[in-house]
Image (cartoon, rainbow over all chains, first blue to last red; front, side, top):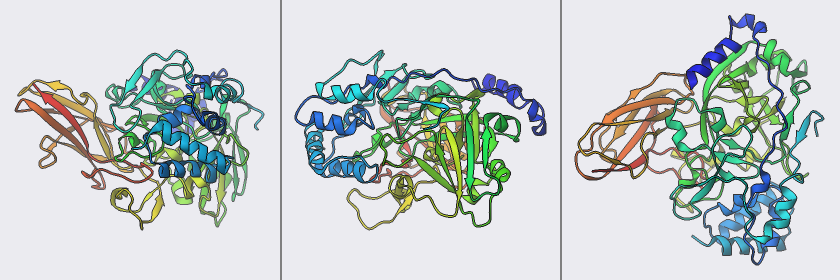
Length: 111
Length: 410
């Protein structure tokens, strides 16, 4: 694929030597507004705390982010939630953070 | 919020419904064609495949929002450049534009400069010398899925890397147009993506001034001869050849020349590795320093055979793949059939440039029936060699040990 694309690029973008580039015909096509399939996320499995983790975490990322994580210890989950709060400023109360860690330890299992 | 962009309103399709329905269990996904199984222990091993993202072909969904889309590994056997529609996708924040007006888009250059700039795409395309370079974009966490023990983070297999031929302008020329003032030490870069929450840190990265002006760091408005896909950073992306993709700011619209290192959490807290050989420590180990992730390291992969493939015993078997040298070119790719005791050379393909994938090929013969391993090892032009020992660090970053492919001769 690279040859034909590169040929097109060279012909289109790089015709002539560098100082003559004002003649290069590249125009960026205005793109239509793209449609992102953000509604495709599967959500968190129902159970104790699932409403808390959904309301605290899915503002910034879909549930599959969390559900695709490996099994981790409670200490590791605590560190993950703490980083979301302290580094990325997720407004999670200490009480909700405990519920979230409990949910993750239960749903994801321990290694 | 910039007037010329249409942001992906979280309320429009995803956020509120996801939050409201998140507690209700599984929702039916839209047009999820099939799943991909990475066959890894310790956590979910399968991921959905999708074709529903704009300007993207068949991709592995590591995360729906903000998107983490992984390149299916078989793509790497099809050529040295990764097709744009299967170039991997990674965003930190979900609030990035779903439309950019190419007429009003402006790249701001400000800070410690003599002449602050607001450069239109037209000025970038027509008024500055054109520059072209091939380079591998690799997420710092590529291959984190294979960490042992497993670690938190984007669970990428080996497909958060892609190679492209970029066209655009040198960052040096843009900085010279603005006139860097004395005392400048760093250049910070930001894009049109914004944090979801008001107090959250905007995603930015910085380079030191000499690196920024090295004549290779560039701003790309085209990859592989086409304009950038929206999800890969349309209309303008910072390309830092040889360095981790975390520096390759997408939808780049802000360049600030400063007199201080990057103070953001993306450098002071995230994207850091132990300052130990091969950035490797033991799980639980303490007492080592942490440094920011910077350059890529050499890697190599077999692309025409998969784990568990059966090959004819005693017969010539072609083996081919890709390698990259990191921040130096590929000097050699060697294969071992005996666990690393002896190595045989491969034939390198056409050199597309220091920072590009380099294809390689060889012919092996497996002498006896049963299980065999093939190891591929890249040595770069600085004689940096992929380590045999597995790389492990708490962040799951910069994995680059020699890959082992299990085959069966029958």
